[in-house]
Length: 90
Image (cartoon, rainbow, N blue to C red; front, top):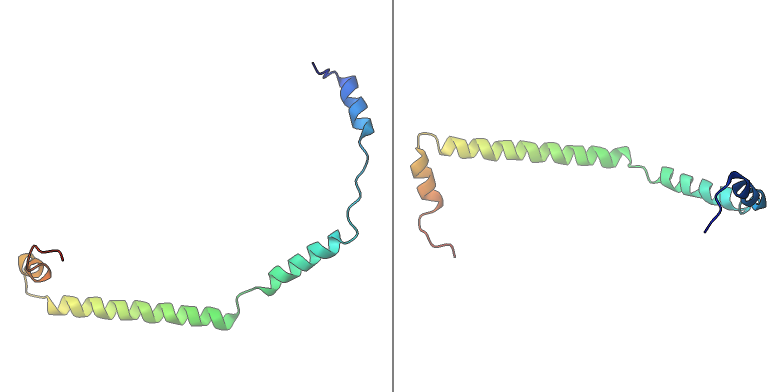
């Protein structure tokens, strides 16, 4: 059975020595910080992604509006009949 009295805990804590860090620890941490700051996204890349998303949205709006324009005047049953003319799945 362990003795958890305050005196025994202090006795154990007195035996603990200070630990010295590796001499290159700060250098390794600094290199990791520098490497992470170098991996930032460039403004040209972000502009390209933004332009691609805008073009994709415009294309989707065009396709959806074109589909709605074609199907104007048709009822839901006619549209559903065009989508599944038969019950065969394959």
